[in-house]
Length: 170
Image (cartoon, rainbow, N blue to C red; front, side, top):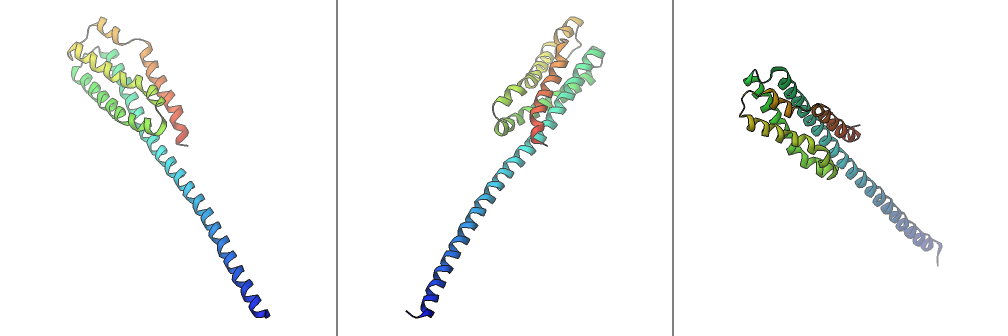
């Protein structure tokens, strides 16, 4: 066999091996890129969900504490202002409740247990308004709703959720 044919055969073999190696390297880096993209996409979704949930959580906490403070301070002396605080609290609790599904999807079912005290606060406020008919409360009624631990319970619940969700924001 002449030398030129041998070189041509070996050249073809080398070319095929080089193309095969290049295809394998391309497939490897393509798979790594897709994996990184998928991980980034999931992280971005969790980041955005955590940020939105924290915003709603802070708004609900602030409304709840404002509502409780106004109950203590005026004993329903200003019905209109009190009613506005209550409506704002209801709106923010409902917003938080609608985000609780996103919380469960992105962070697991155990997170619903952490947010349920705030959601039940909204139901308790509704019950209180229904029982009093939106009228001025007596001191006994007020003391029944304003247990000393309620304020700390709200802030502890928010702090607990905050510590879990801020991991996904940083």
